[in-house]
Image (cartoon, rainbow over all chains, first blue to last red):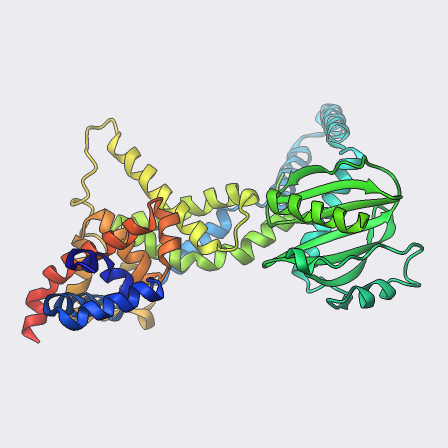
Length: 261
Length: 178
């Protein structure tokens, strides 16, 4: 290894960011090179001084409060508006009451209009429900009701809890180990949820009887999660994960291949 | 429409990294008041972009927003119509621990040698200072730093090398005294 190259690697060695073979070569060079040894000692000293100099200061309390206050909190602002409106109505004399009533009915009308316009379609509602359920399953340690990597444990566990037998397949070989199962209530019915994992990302697979979608998976994205929806052999499937669109695609094709086998 | 689940996730995943955000902003701006403004603006942006955040490393993600906020904030200052040019040096000596005055227990008493390290880092060029701060103070990996600064890992390494080299030169007189 030439001298100049070794100097370039010096920070990486100090920060333990080199690969093993590079690190060994670096050490070999250091043994025979006084100049590099000095440079290394110097850099290490600087690093130690930086870490001992109390350069890091905690954020002031006031900043934390300012940020919390600045984050949008729609519920509070809506209450405030309502309160202001009530106060405004209250402060008017009686002769203004009809105006207030008219105004109120205009407000009521526009609110119901916007509600009408904002009513999500059943599909959107289901998607939202699944995303919420997925997030909840991650938050409250309610990822599984039955913890097992064995499909012969997970599948019988659903017996007697559901009016159908969900297909449970093992995908550990393909890189998606089964980690458990769960019973959830989605779309106004109990559904089976199989939990797989890709690296550190959980994948929730929802299954219930029906033929609501085509055989070709439809992929959509919501709030950073990817969902896929398809139907096969009389079952509706929804898969959801934060692993990424490509990973979800790969998972689905492996799963479908296994189901068909 | 704000989603309560998202708000909750933001509060558990991103808010706890306020000290990191403030620290990085402080060493980029070298001014406590500006650092607070940059950190606050960064948090508002982070909240806005949070629905698209998909990674696992919320701290590195937040710090990249802090850094971007700092750079746009600096550009806005430079473009101020009043003709005052944003001068890094003019703003450079205001970093203090003044905000801790209202919190005597946390008052920082630095030794003379610590003070010198402080001054040396403050005097370092921005492109070196940011990688040194991310590495030595925030203890991030080269990969994380590369993602935050938007440079290849090899460049992270060479900038750290040059940054430490310059700090060594700045601190040399002090080290000889020892």
